[in-house]
Amino acid sequence: MKNLLVLLLLFFTLLHVNAQNWGLVWSDEFNGTTIDAGNWKFETGGGGWGNNELEYYTNRTENARIDKGNLQIIARKESYGGSNYTSARIKTQGLKNWTYGKIEARIKLPASKGIWPAFWMLGESISQISWPHCGEIDIMEHVNTAPSTNATIHWDNNGHAQYGGDTACNVLNYHTYGIEWDSKAIKWTLDGKKYWDANIANGINSTSEFHQPFFILLNMAVGGSWPGNPDGTTIFPDTMFVDYVRVYQLVTGVSTPLLTSFSATIFPNPSNGNSILQMDTPVSGEYAIRIFNSIGQQVVQQKIR
Image (cartoon, rainbow, N blue to C red; front, side):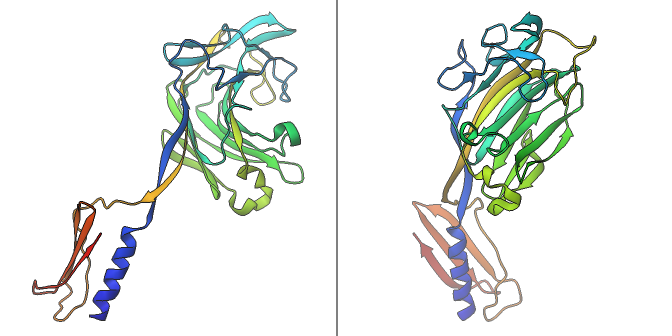
């Protein structure tokens, strides 16, 4: 009977383990007619943006607009502000920021030489401590015509440090690009499947930046140190389509059993290894647990409210 009591206590514990679920805390579905100024700010200007980029970012509808339920970021070949190309770059800085969560966007991308679209995050502290000390999480970057998407983090470890990888992807189709970010790791996903991760537990390797608030950016660069310059094959104008951006955070609660019964081998007397522990599904918040011996006799019944 002592063994039966231990089993009941273990089972009661299992009923009360915490379940982790993602709850939506913010989104932009781009269903309106204009870009929501409560969610996004434009960054404007040229000068290379630290990457030898060639575009001038504007706040014009020619470069960023809402159409048919999508945010469209459009790169154009035109003379503007001393640059030969224009595009757009928007961010949630000063409006929305998050520490940890599942952050994802459904996006369809262009694929041309010298085109560099990105969905990424920067530490909210960038205005105070600059880059790379603030940290950077590149959720999705795509360069040129590569059949892949890239995942990278940048931070300060006595100088600029970075870590990243990639996975195969036909970016000309819509895909959901995301991360799942908590106090232990950042995990990159493509259409809900993990393909890369980075360990940030306890600020390992000076990754304390990634335990602070971050904001979201969407942009499409033209040229730059990574993709190089456009050439005669590059298509202009070309468009990055963003169906939505969503942010989820963990919601903790009591788990609910998914099965109508649970069986396990126990050892009452008599026993031949076929004794059964049965749990009935809850009715009005009450669980019934019954234990049967090997000849079918019920030896214990316990109700838990």
